[in-house]
Image 1: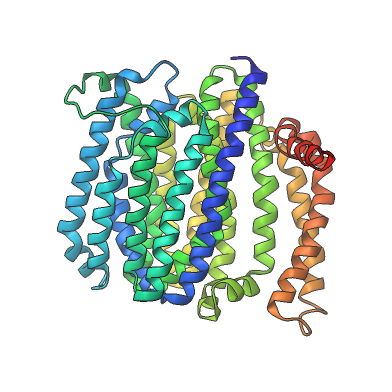
Image 2: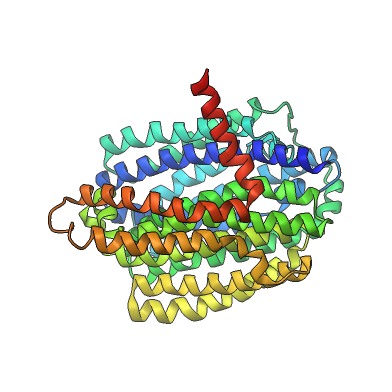
Length: 494
């Protein structure tokens, strides 16, 4: 496919994915802000235990077939029914295991409240397994406007069910009912947005072609889960429900921006980079500009939240969550490293090298175990956060080095487009922090301080970073900022 056409397809897809994730995160932030004032930390902790049980089964049994469908260059029609059948049976098996183990899990974490929540999560899991593969096909085809509609409908369903029930019940079961509503709507929407109609089948022969990639994808999924959720398990078991609730919420809030950007990039870059996987020049250019675009968004966001963490947490979550501020600050660094690591991993997966990703995650897991446990026991929640930061830093260095070797360039070249965001964030923070939290700290409310910080930090960052970004990531700037500006000027001109 010609480069300009692929670029336009990618830009269109990125816009729709970004819109979907932005909507989902806006709803998610509003949901957290409201629920944090209606439910106690132990409620979120108990629900976190239920999600941990689900995540354990989900990751340990994930076959890696969905990723294989997107990565594969040739047609995938003959695989679809067999893949969907495997996924349906897997979801039903997970639901049964969740229900059967609810008492064991609740007893292990000494959280009786978790048992009924696990039952509800099992119901949601059984329903969600029937989601059509049409969503994966839309990703493969870069027709993500239709995917947006399914995600948006599911997000609204979650919000519209969870919030009213939280007011009425003042119980974590409201979170479970929202999850069930979300999965019901997602299943229905997945059949409406794509014409593919899956059928159950026992003819699984075609799956042999996907075996190697799928096995490595499954190992990657399991290791990623252990790395991702091992800290939650440690906190929940050693520090208790309340500590887990604080850790889960601060983790989510600190990583909202980076997690969603990572998902947007994964949904768009995997099918795009898979099409150019043999052209190392285009691969290197895409990765370099991708890292620059990531840093342009993530670095200023994380830096700003770092300097305003205290008023931000107090305003949006409430004073009862202020104990999580030190942990929140550390997890901001984790989020930046994580999304940069995943950008490199996207290029490696597009090349089909899942074995390397698996080995890298094994190293990351070893570092996490060696760091999280001693640091957590010594320093509490901030120590746990520093442990995951260290493990993510190791993963980033490994993936960056491997990708640099693939494209035949130095590591600093692949991350060179981050210069503008680094300089802009650092200088904007250096001016904003002493001004806002120095002379103004004694005279303004927390809301006033936050607003002034935004008004000072944002223009400083843009003035410093934008000229450099136009040089370092011209394609990204053209298909995002320039096109949006042209659309605005046309609208106002008409």
